[in-house]
Length: 255
Image 1 (tube, rainbow, N blue to C red):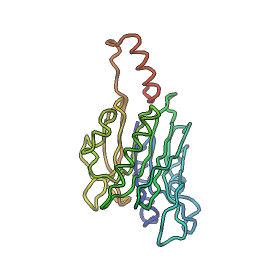
Image 2: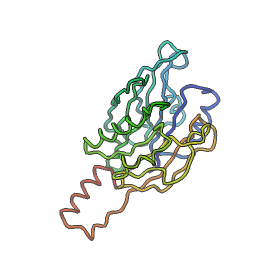
Image 3: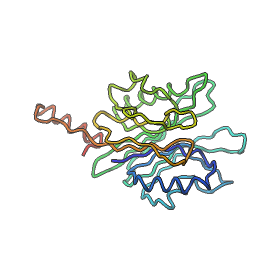
Image 4: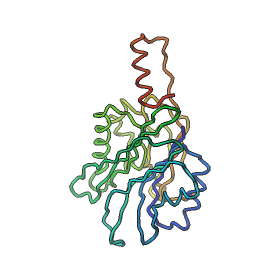
């Protein structure tokens, strides 16, 4: 399964970047694409950027969650959020507003998607945490997201713009249940020579490949990963353990 995440950088220089984005996304042929900084600005277009991209890409399933109002010095009304494209049906979705730390001007959201692939449900979380400066707004968003998923008994594939350059240093938050795309070195925010875009995948999966885009398609580089389910050693399991593993595999979308 191939998944891409890309922060679209709003409509900035869109006429220049749109064709390059399409060319890259066609080249990866991802099964699922997660987008951040998806905006609805009717003075520019009656469609958001993902809807415009998909006029060419032709993914059969699209889900937009442009659900938040954001302060803007340029636009009277600025609507922003997340979106996803999928080759497979989105059978259930949810959009949740994360808590807003004092001083943070953004109401961030997490987009939860249940996607049916080969009669299995693959659970995805598309995220864009707040930019941190002198105050760390992103870490509380990460903690809240992980706590939310744990409270539901879910281990989702989490991808997007974490706005954290040190995710591996806070592995105590996620390493018990997840693997991180930091298994390979890469840069996803070239202007500051750092990475802030990641995938966290349940340990029932493994990374087969991790790569970023080379062409300039945004202020972020796209991050594309190929992942596959880990094999279970059923020969060493009791019947009860095997039944539990089967149920876990079904929940996580392991085929």
